[in-house]
Length: 368
Image 1 (spheres, rainbow, N blue to C red):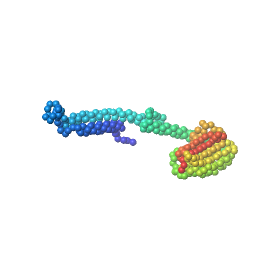
Image 2 (spheres, rainbow, N blue to C red; image 1 turned 180 degrees about the horizontal axis):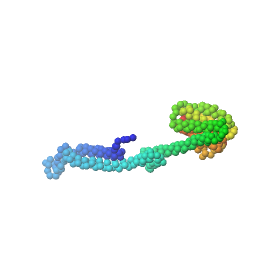
Image 3 (tube, one colour; image 1 turned 120 degrees about the vertical axis):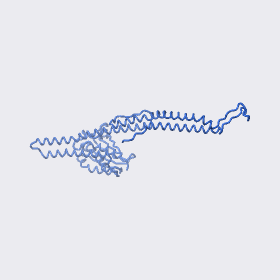
Image 4 (cartoon, rainbow, N blue to C red; image 1 turned 135 degrees about the vertical axis):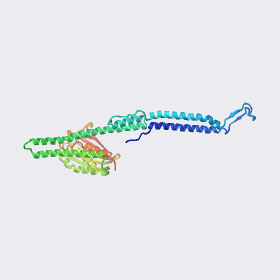
């Protein structure tokens, strides 16, 4: 934004300091002047040495107010000039020292504007307004740097994931073109599978983007009803894998997008089913109200997981491939979408390994 040139803040502060000092000096001199006038007669006169009225030798001259003014005014004027000079000089130095942190903050802002998000201000000293501003700016830069790095990783991973089905499709078509008697039905079936995976990945990316932008209308949503709906939708998959799904709990009403929260619940339950034991597995879905908000908890049996592995499961394109043995492994965005949706609703996702094997996923959201 183009702005016309103007005086610097340092100059304005210096002028303000000098102005206040001059005003204070003038007030002090005015008080002294008024105090002196109480003991000075209007006209000049004299008294005798012995106090006799004859005005003999030894008399004392008594100045009047005009005489006092002639003696006092020049000294007061010089003192006001001195106060002005001292105020300007001292104010300029003090303002420079007070505003020095702003130079570092401005330099960091310009560096961040040019793309250097790794720069930090790190103002030393005790807490004050400038240091609180600098700390807040450093925190913002840290979050920005983390967000940009995450977006770059996500873009790279998404490009790789989207390129894979396209490369497979191209390979299938090249092989079929070279085969004089291609099996059309087999080719169509493989192409359909690859295309379905690409569509699923694209839809997952769109959901993730929608959650990040918070472009949804808030409405009352009961998580217990969403849990029952998700269990009903995924019942065929659970029966196919031999996993028993149990839902229960109390009504837990929050505010947000019903579609996104249903996706959150479905993804969590889908993850609990596909990352389960090969047979006789179980998944439990419960909802409740807690002091921190409403809670959706999905627990499932499965392999024993290390804590460091669990911490990475919500990262985009992270799959427990050693625990997925079929085509229901998803596209690696299930828990990432859950985390983003929870964050978009001012909630959080907590993952923890289950003592007997498996995973415990807990989503905490604000009450309605």
